[in-house]
Length: 343
Length: 297
Image (cartoon, rainbow over all chains, first blue to last red; front, side):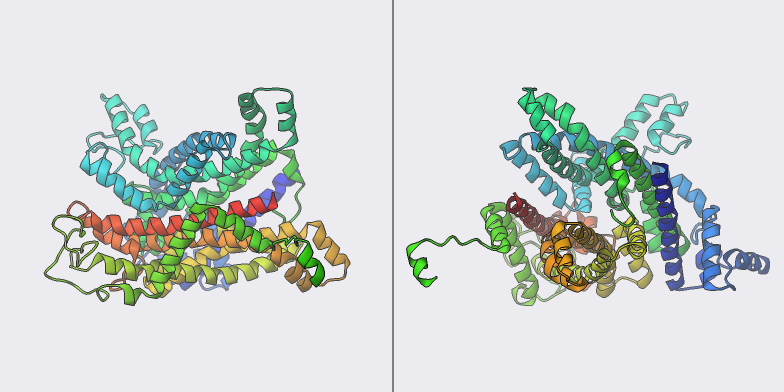
């Protein structure tokens, strides 16, 4: 087990190194002054110039430059934003929770809706229920997320005025950001109308979360269905059937726990898709997360922000996938025996 | 042989491809998907002949005309017009080329490069395979659309750049799929048997492995086409994609967004086109997957 953990850690460091290399190469390809693009300082004084040159090793070899880049970024120095002249790290810390909040809720919906539907489909395999669930998931899988968001805004937001269409919270409520998660912040705050603020934040969450969740729901349905069908064909299920255990107990107690492991492993692979759809969702619903921040940086050609955004998003995905991998390994002894380079 | 064939009924065992086709064509949903797909290919090839008006032609006397079945609509503009008087039907037909046609092209280019690298890394083992695997993991960790967005942000919007960006973001997925499929087959016993017969690496690959991974690749292709369509449309929607006067479904949708109250057909039809094309491809993919599964069962 510890050998495996060490190897995963090794993989983590190497993957992170390659990610940094890719972003570093991107910096090389960027138009404009390399020092400005790296640090975000548009017109540095002489002293600053000397300091920056030392930090990023610009006079050194390419390898030294890479090392300088990695050390600066790992020590939390992402430079300044070209547009706001604020430290990028502060902006990230301010905006990342909004994105994570959205993603977590969407993931919770995806798992809590997708797994039961997938189990139901496999339980009624090749019957009307199964056919209905599979075709519904196929249709929902094909809807472009931005179209769905726009239709949601058009009908629920404007036509029937049921739900707010933009932002996280009505401006009437002044909530101090402590954790960055609106619902938790409202709980912690000392507002007089706490329940109203909570309700408002919840209504703001509904549409973006459902828009974002639709795609993962269909993916979870498919994965669960496939895993369950495989599991229901194994011998221990047949033995349980032969003993006359009721089908419901077989599905819930004998098949589902085993089918869950591949499902969770597959779901962690979907994270990068989730994060990209979260970016689009944020743009549609003006959600003040990392997606809108990155998109506006792209429109304004704010290169330090763009590179920091890629590093943070991809780094997050790498960390989560390694952690979920380790959890999966801890739960299943079977997977520990894999060899180098064989996934 | 000639004599017996008249007396006894020969039992013809269909080839694997024939079996897949039989299973595939049994499902009406999959066939519907295939037909819709064929129609889209037809439209994207013959777009200039099919479109009623030239690309970007502005009818100044007919701004924001509703679709023809609307009481105020006119049959000359079947799906209505946008705020500049451009016929939506013509725009959609030309958009088929940029969104659907380009996504097909991009997929096959990405398929080529991804497969070559994937085969190379799949057939190798030990340190070389490990290193390639790590590089793959790192590229797969960067969200594909983010990669495309950044690429476009650096090199500027435009048809070629969008295609390059989407192609680059699709390639790692093909690499991973090919790598896994090759690795999976390599550990099977029939490969060991050919190895014992003295086949060299390229012989093993061409004669034993390639026929068996083709199925997995075809499914990956259908997946990739639908991803490519959505990615190109998303880039267009974020105003980073194809620039006017070329028409593109995602860009049309985002242009119509400002007029969503006045002229909802400007948003509805491009979205419907994206949805239909992606759905048809997913239907094909689903049908193929089931056909393959039935063949193996």
